[in-house]
Image: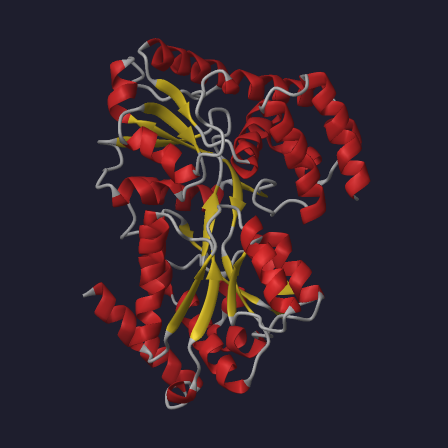
Length: 415
C-alpha cells in the first residue's frame, strides 16, 4: 500500500512540473554511489523502483568503500574523460568543490516549485547550495555519534542501564571483554577510525571544543591537553578491538555485533540498516545510544545526489530523480530502511522504529555539528590531514603527545 501511494504521489508531482509526457524521451540515469552493503542496497532499491515506475531506467555504478573516497577518485577520472555520470552520491565539501568547478546542474526551478527552502534544515542547505543555487538533493541526515549494542551480551554482563559517560562506557567494555567477547567491533579503515574520533572529541571536550577544533580549527584548542586526552582515549579504545580488525569493512564489524561475537560498535546510523536486514528488533535484539557523554549533541553527514551537466534528455531524468528523492513519501520509505533520518523537517515519524524516532528528535532539538570524518566540518585537504594523524595513532605508530603536535602541523600545512 505504501509503495503504491508513493508511486501515485511521485506521478502527480511529475505532472505538476510537466515532466510526464517528456519522461518517455528521458534518458536512463547512471548513478555513481557507494551503497553496496546489504542494508544500503535494500534502501537504494526503493529509489530504483520509484524511477522505474516513471519509465526511467537505472544504470548502476557502485564503488565499494564507505566514506566515498574511492567513488570520488572514480568520478574524477570520468569527468576528465568527459563522460560524467548523470547523478552522483556525494557528501559535504565534495559537493562544494565540484560546484566551484562549474560541473553541476542548477536545480533552482525545481527547488522553488517544490518549496525546498522551507523544509530542508539550514545545516544541510549549507552543502546543497553553492553561491545560493541548489546543486544537490539531500536524501537523508545521518548522525555519526552512535553506539550499537548487542542486547543479549549487554544483559549478560549486567549492563541493564546504558552507559551515559566515558567511565561507565569503559566499565561495560571491560565486562564484555572479560566474558570472552570482542568488546568493540571495528574495521581498521581510516574513515572508520575517524568516525570514532568524532565521538571521542565530542565526549571529551563537549560541543564547544568540537566546534573549536573540528570546525573552526582553533590552533590553541587543537594543541591543548584536552586534545591529548582525546588521543589517550582513542588508544584506550584500541585495547578493546580484536587482532583481525585491519581492513575490515564496517558492515562486517556490524555483523560481529549482530552474530553475538562482539558487544558494541561505534558507527553512524547506517549500521542500523544491517541490523534491520538481519531481522533484528531495536530494544529486543540490539540497542542504540549516543556515544556516552554526547547526549543532546549530533555530529551529522548528509548523503546528497548531485546532478552533473548533460543534454536536455538527461536533464529530464535528473529532475525526475531529484523530485523522487525529495518527496516526503520517499524520504520516509527510504530512511526507514537506511537507518537515517529524513532530510526534510515535515516528514512524520510514524513509520520509524524507536532508534529512528530518537534520531529525528535529536535532530529537531539537539546541537547539530558537521562530522569531520564524513566531510561536513572542514574541506577535504584538511580532513585528510586530520584522518592521517588519527589512523597513524590508532595503529600505535606515535604517542598521544606526538599526535597532537602532528595534528596542529598537518592542519596548518593543509590550509
